[in-house]
Length: 499
Image (tube, rainbow, N blue to C red; front, side):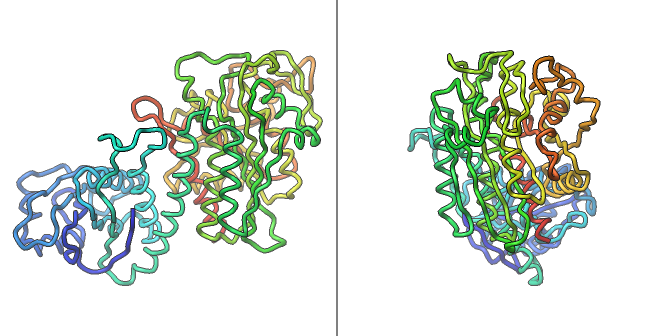
């Protein structure tokens, strides 16, 4: 969809759907008040007649406007109490607005919601959120559907104008729009990759998409390590997972050089299990199709590198994505097998379904060669994290308080929250093995934490944080589909680093 920033009266857009806010007790923001006056008090009369609650996200459609009005219809969006609109409720209002606008049949929407007051947030942030939420609301996965079907037709909405009363808002709004669209485009890439089935999105396919991405900018280079390369590096843990699959493993390396030559890079690591059946420790059949989403962390890395390219971020970044499948083939890992990692640490595999940490640990060791400023890994790692935190926040663990606090703050700003869990030394006791240096599981207690404790053994030489996105990377049930989290959090983290 096309977007534009305009200042002045919303009345100057013929044939549009106007998206205007209203508060409780029938109080009106400036743009709504101006439109009410232009319509001889129509909005005030309707609000008095219908007396809507005006909770955040409530919609009151006005489909019949007086003769001579340039707009076709108005969507009045509830904003709660005047002066108390929170970031959460602002996003809720935007989500409701784009859904209603998409369904109303107009080709042009003029939205004044980014011009309302949202706590201490500025125009740039409000516009960025609006662009991201509108693009998310319009996202459709159609790659595997027959074209031309009624339920596969794109929405009629072609353009959105974000409207501001003051000319002074134009520059900040433009910056916010550019940022929001870049993040939205990165999220769309993530969702497209993650929603593809495992027979299409293989490790090789994921590597090809990384190479395609690298062609977009001279600042971005892709290098794909095959199994022979990984064998030479001693990545016995990662390669042990791919043994049960006919699809060869790939280690995707993306290097983005947008900062000064001497600037240490931030390394982003993403788990890339393009399908996870659990291996010999086979998962239950119910909902196993959702294990195509076990590569959402890896897809997130590709999305973030695309955002960096689109915004020309002045940072040095490295993206690392270990990509493989985990299947119960004749050569697959068996419970009790012992493998040797790139770090030389031997690992007893007590559960082959705890494979994510096996491919990540070698990748974390590989990250050392970049002498990184910090390393953040993103992984759909443990069902235990969903049990602990549900599907609202991502789990956050790490060995550096400053880095973790940065990520927590970025999550709050982006509306993509994380919650920190401890990785105290006491939890390491659960990973003891009688036969190897470490076991790959620590029992039923604190599973998300012991998984992070396992990874921490391979991240001792740099500042490191781990995001467990098992509960947030996709939605299940009727709304099944990838969410592209934690891309909003991580994009905000990178923007904050630039500042």
